Image: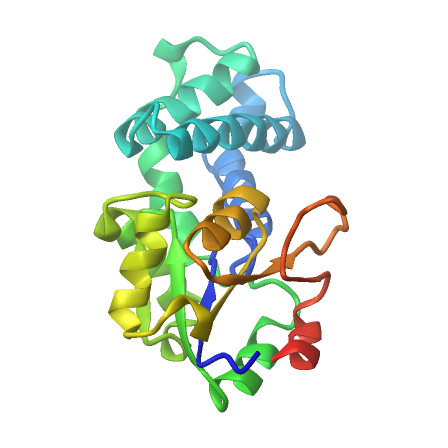
Length: 230
């Protein structure tokens, strides 16, 4: 298939959300003297965050909560799992996380190498469920912005992946048909099933080889393998 345009997911596909979040959380653990005030470790704090965050984002994709709920309730829920009452959670914790984490620069392995290769051959865009301001900060601070002609967020498109509307919005933005594009992402539902529903081929990125049964046009476990496909 001779594709003309590439769509990329951002978090966990290009931008290393897990590493960036962990660094931020451990910074906050130290800055807020958590080890002096409560009996949990930095690793327990990060583990609790990822459990709660995964659950909240799953609910967000399903449309049962909005972004304000995530921002307000994420850290109280994290701390509740660790035995801390909501009234004891520092009120500035959520805002500090949102200010610091998007500025972390770490990318998934070989991200810049593969983007350097692909930008000579394709136009490229981002399709993300992340919040517009935060995603723009991630792209800028990690050096990814110059690679992408368009950034389509769920806020701008009015729908979250996997809804076909966000993919159709992106197709209209780049003036391409579904058959001319391919979606590259790590989420079997949001990225892969969502793109398929919009008539777009998919490349499932599964670096840990966790989901062998995912039905996608192609699959890779390292971004460098995109050279063999594109």
